[in-house]
Image 1 (cartoon, one colour):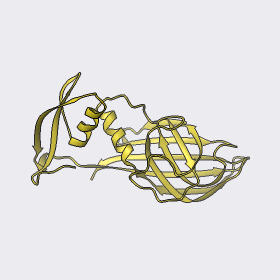
Image 2 (tube, one colour; image 1 turned 135 degrees about the vertical axis):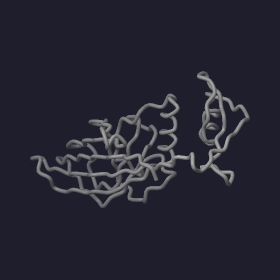
Image 3 (spheres, one colour; image 1 turned 180 degrees about the horizontal axis):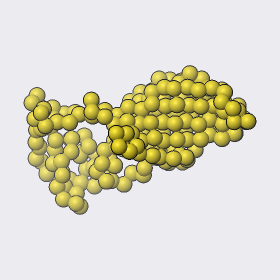
Length: 199
């Protein structure tokens, strides 16, 4: 958030759809990509007219054996990284980044950090089984489910993330958890709920 001491500052830009306002960092990104130009005008939002929000995630990991019996279950929270926040801004501005489509697991237990752009050591990636927005009072939630079948993502797993491509791509969020030892015949289901709420 940019503030001049009285409230949040926004900057005006123009693109092929006309004039609009964004926080300076977001407008500058559009300019750098050649998708907009700045008009030079700014405005200050008074504190009483500002809406603050936060994005949090909760992750449930369930490991099953070859017979479908539950072996282990973990619950943990996640970190929405900087590239994830930029992606959300891109989607709000109806730009050209692809929606989140894949989930990955890995073997690096380095703590999640805002500057992460990949997993530390990726061991496997799958297309999302489902992406669902909640309804009614839960409409501020999006649930992603990833299923890692036998032979996929085998190893001592300690990290996971959501991305928008089958390789490379933009990292939305990352989590680190106590080790899950996924054998070659085991399967792992990860249910990841992101919630957008007023702070």
